[in-house]
Length: 84
Image (spheres, helix red, strand yellow):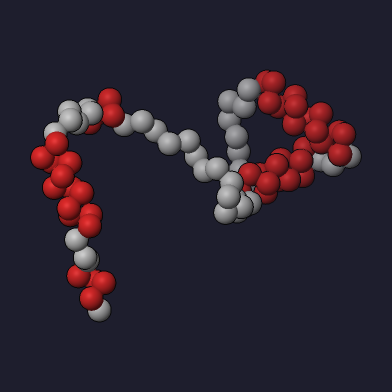
């Protein structure tokens, strides 16, 4: 497979060149090593991508004791799948 990366920032290109020279490998091999590391499966306890706060899009629900009670009761009710 051929991969072309356009508009690579100069500082990143220079760091990649230095890494390749330090490791005694080609620029291509250095890039492949870095990409392999980037796509390696995460450990189960490793943090994933940062969570986004979407409240600005959906708003924050004002306090409603009746609704809170109803949700609490719904969460306590046995699920139909529990009976099976």
